[in-house]
Image (cartoon, rainbow, N blue to C red):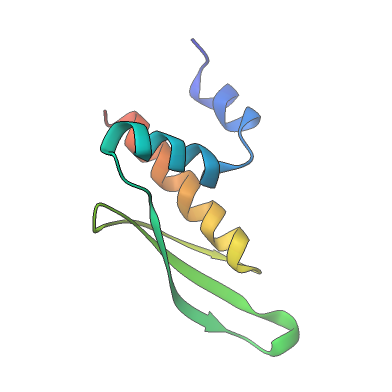
Length: 84
């Protein structure tokens, strides 16, 4: 079995991995909700909340919506798999 550090190094699309995991484990998909946007047009920072089964799991922040979602998905996936 791969160690946690090896898994983190291999995975770069946590949104897809989390979606597959939640569909198989919880029979649902994660929901991403934009909760904030700040900064000037050329230097925006986006903030996203991630919910699984209506429960807030994580928030992510990034220079794009996708980056913010990936960060939230990574945190959620690692927490869920650690706490199974």
